[in-house]
Image 1 (cartoon, rainbow, N blue to C red):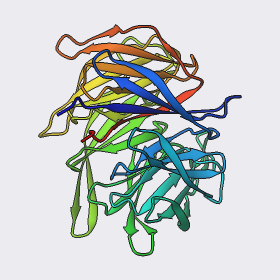
Image 2 (cartoon, rainbow, N blue to C red):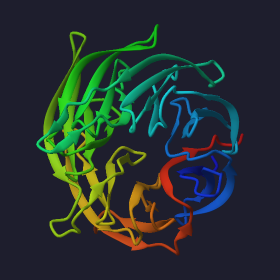
Image 3 (cartoon, helix red, strand yellow):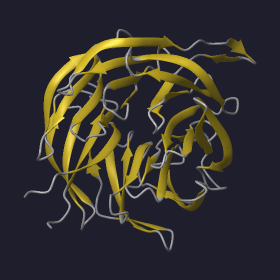
Length: 353
């Protein structure tokens, strides 16, 4: 058995540099990255890897792009698909890798696209526009679909609407590729649900709220072909003492599903929680500064010994050694320059035989 090898994909906004996806070799021992390659793509604000680990999908100004993940971690362009609307902000696949979902922040739209056998992007199978409420209490409630994720049983698509303060739940027709509204998970007014993730066992849902700086935890089960969500916890993403005007952004599980990571722009901090495997509840381990401006994304290395923060406004990534027992975060080497980083994914390479 050789050592596990990883690459990291970092998606960026391209201001003058048209290489929107950077590929890094990951040094797991030292907790550092080394740039390996880059992909020419405009404003790759968000990326996802298919559940079979064979393909990567990215947002771009012109819709979505599909790439084949090569054995060495490099990416090979397959094709591009239009989403028939304004630029997307989030992309994910269903658990059979047969459909791609794109959320539209600007136009409040969900686009469903069929995926082809080779991982390429096919035709649009459904388009749903979230509806607004107009102006209430002097705030203009407008739909901004910020995240789209399937439940792990692959039955329902959950769409976080940051403008409307709720998550819409749709039943998925896997033959036609269409969605039917079946439920709505209400967040607090003006909390702005940004991202959502399901635990690996599929029993718990975590929603991070940008404006209220908190994570809501729900239980999930499918009862008689209807989704049932029950809130069991709300926990802050900040310390009691913190910078005003903070916005929570990241939401990432550790590879072993034992920890959950979030980040706070404004406060410029990262928070790590321990996940109770039985109850799904979160306990804060630490919330500490990231030494950079506007951490858009932050995540633990697959060995949980290091952490990387993507500091959007500082045009840099910062690296830290993590001590979960002592609740410590220690700077690990100098920052790495990267223009407008937005999203990161670690990908484990297949072992060479």
